[in-house]
Length: 370
Image 1 (cartoon, rainbow, N blue to C red):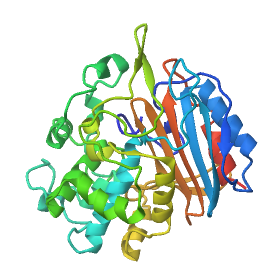
Image 2: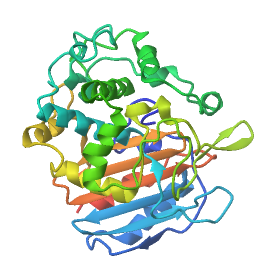
Image 3: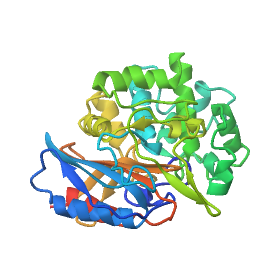
């Protein structure tokens, strides 16, 4: 799972959450990106609803042309279709927004990427003198992933799904364990990194990190369907529901307190908003050139992950950037070609029957491979 679990690869981890079955016929609308076969898209997302997803919604764009598609149902046990403009929990895609804000602060001279975290948050981390801001954004800090300490199986999560978590509590879950490795020497996906990054934004700006994201990203791009809920348990606007099974009972997991994810994965968005956002990220619209280059930079220690941005080469040779996300009930993808011209955004809600979300690889290949 993306946010509420271990590392999620852009292509592999939409497979991480409970889920799926329920047949259904995919439907598509709007203008089509002519190169992309909509029938293959339909078949791929129908396959996902037979193998893990209660419902699927996707948006595919090529330049200014594109189309939306859906499969499965919005609510288990009904035939109500997934809303094409539905809101959904995006999980770890939140990290890309947070990275953009931190890099904006770097561009303004208010944060130094290679300064130790202790300069900005003294006393927060036992190893804060050795962990840099860059290491947080790149997942090379060695900080233990706090979500490994949470009960994320369905039975266990039911006991904490409405619980409030303060960011310092999440960091304490991590720092109670030793570093996974010396800072800067290896790569390991850890949600703790982005909790600390959110706290850093708050320290520098003097305001909640959510306000910084709102003012610096959501408002300029007019992302009106995107929100940072804090302790709010519901999803505003039209949305599909996610499920899992606890014993013999089917449980609707749509409502939960996302504070356990905080700046590592609490956001709610839409495919339209994420399409606009990933285009802006790919084209460097939100950052100065130096910071836009840093965001995409890969290293020997971190060969697939820049600063909040994952980079993958598909089997066909096409290169994509973006992020995936997972939080109970929802798995998501936000992908783009490196130049921002071709984009894919998708949400998969989980079914109580479980499954592997088969069909995702075919969907990605159809969109990005010639």
